Amino acid sequence: MNEEKNEIKITDYTEKRTDRNKKKSLSKKNNLFFDWVLPVVIAVVLAVLINKFLIFKVYIPSSSMEPTLNVGDNLFVTRVYNPEKLHRGDIVVFESKELNETVIKRLIGLPGDTIKIDGGVVYVNGKKLDEPYVKNPMDTYGEYKVPEGKYFFLGDNRANSNDARFWKNPYIDGSDIKGKAQIRIYPLNRIGVLE
Image (cartoon, rainbow, N blue to C red; front, side, top):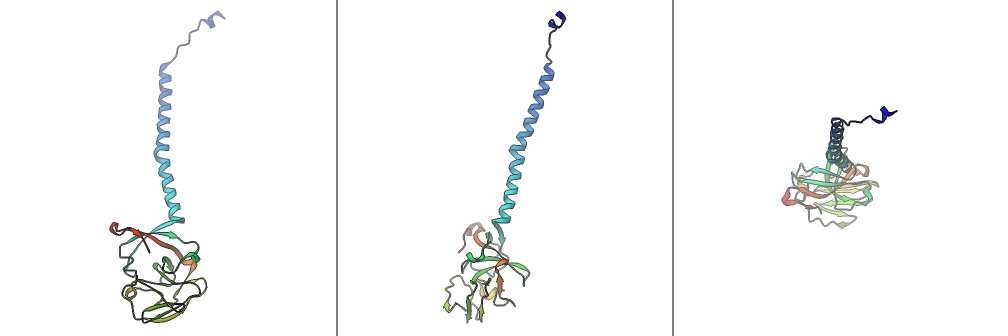
């Protein structure tokens, strides 16, 4: 028994140093993960979710919406889940099944409206529509009764816009509406809220 009491425990400092180094190494790996990897992953996931459900960006490829939107403008568009909340005059992004492409135009006719174009002047339900945004009015004629659940769109540059006046089916279904243009983000000298 005495022999056991006389034993002296010698500490191996190399072992302790190695343990400390392992802990530091793990700590550095944790810091790398929490300081860099995790925030980047969260940012990417948030960006994807925002783009999918809230806001997306569009580029204007043509002059059909001049002078409001010019070729090369970049816009932020808020997603529309309830087209009934849109107002006449809103600038809207939608899918055209007839053209097989995404289009941006100004909302002119709501479900149930009667649209009459007489010599390029637009009347909605018998009242002349004030359109200070129109460039190059075109001497066109036509009358349209917008069905329930459908919408009627025209470009601001009437002389250079392939819009409802020329489509086989001039009406866009509410389910094809993707978003409402809100803010021009480029070019920098034209940044601002759209009206």
